[in-house]
Amino acid sequence: MDFKKFYLMSAMAMVLVLAACGGESSGEGAETDEAGSEEGSGETITYENSYESGPPRGEEGDTTEVNETVELPKNSDKVAIYDLGVASTFKALGIEENIIGLPKGDNNASLSEVNEEFESDEYANLGGLKPDEFETLAELQPEVIMIHGRQSNTQTVEEMKAAAPDAQIVFVAADSNNYFQDIMEMTEFLGEMYDVEDEADELVSDMQMKLDEVNQTVTEADKEMLFIQTNGGDLSFHGVGGRYGFLYEDLGFKSAGEQEEGEVTDDHGNQVSFEFIAETNPGVMLVMDRGAAVSEGEATPVDVVKNDVTQDVDAVENDNIIELNPQSWYLNSGGYLSGMAQLEEIEAGMAEMK
Image (cartoon, rainbow, N blue to C red; front, side, top):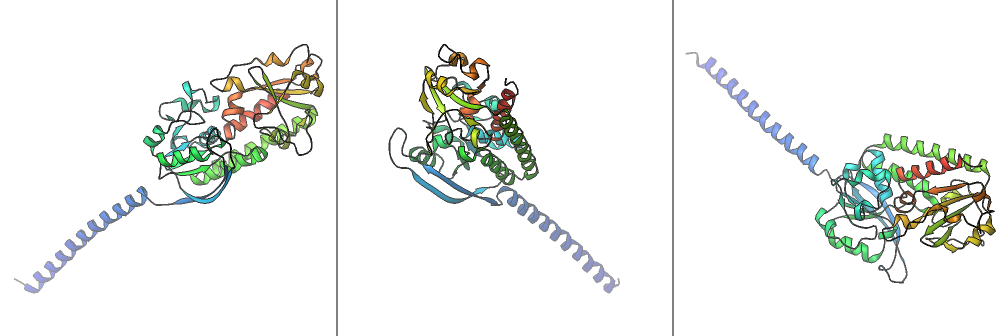
């Protein structure tokens, strides 16, 4: 036998075996690294968490300013949302499957039409907008909890921290005086958080266009407006700088209700009478029935503002009364789809003005 030839053949065979073994080892390592990357890349997005934290529920006291920079996990699929408006923004962006729970209320009473999808059992019910139980939250163990003004008190936040100690709790509500801008900024933020920036840009462009159109319609109508909230037998007036200040700042309405300089109406409006409506004589009225939105409330027909005292009011005489959906305006406000629903309600109502 030619030993030199045998040696060369043996050496080549050994090289091939080692190469094959090395290739298998390398492949397994690549799979492990890739899996590890998918399971926990640790990629985050920065969020400026700023809000006023109030005293415990039902108590009086000073508010505390919360200003912190937090890191939220990108593409998190374990988000608990207490802000139903922002839940509608998730839906608008097509990322609603990342929500694991939200406060639907009894028999889904808290959900507006734009949030009907969340009636599904796929989404856990976190109770009411002012939560009084946190067992469900503890079972879900979310990575992110998004809160609204109704939950931004020290007691509720501490209970959330106890129930889900590893979660980042962030305030996401739109400010009434920067309302639509905040909605659009949150849309852009969620677009970046879930890598759907193009979709977010398109939504923002559509909202700005609709906002401009409604502002033009309102401005051209040139009618003084009175926003009346009904609640059982009570009437309240929402004016400039209050909860619905964006109607004046963003949409261009002129308020029929007189306010002293710098005066801001209360969060639930300033209580008024039918005589107040008659004296202010608005050209158009927006009427929202809070009682129909809250579970313990008593629904009030919009015709309650039409009576002997108000019969000569221009808005009543011409039937220039826009009835607002209380779920969209009171419970689910502050998000993309709910904000667009608000704009469309105003637009449709103004189109019928006389």
